[in-house]
Length: 197
Image 1 (cartoon, rainbow, N blue to C red):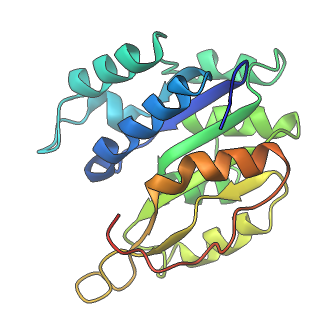
Image 2 (cartoon, helix red, strand yellow; image 1 turned 90 degrees about the vertical axis):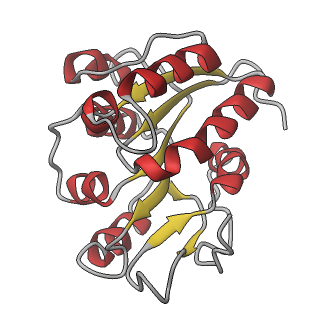
């Protein structure tokens, strides 16, 4: 794939256990010629977990992209009027972010970035990672799947025995989903066996 000249916003939200799987995706997009601008949620910026510190994630995305991250609503707002991105990727996209997007709540930098991108009828790719994807968030995912200019990285149940409501996108399919979305198409099938990838 060749993404030379493509300007991609890449937002990360607080599914901390998934962040390590997203870093190689960012690297692949950069290696394929894309110019990436990272966007970090408040959870990524402030929560220290067993998966890493805020400083770890911030420094990694800067090292990969060569760009300082967008971290506030005022920094994200110009994405719309200035047409900053050809496509916006949200990976991982938590249930919290999914719910806010489905209900038009714009109180984080990531959701502001999505709103700004959709204002221009430009594509947004969501790579969900949520423990309640088949629970309270099922209605939100269903609504967003039918929203124009939103594209989903194929997802499945990552732990059906222990966490039957949990859904996670296959992060190894983000780049393919981006390629399809840039052409106005949804990578199929959307619902797949997760296989722990």
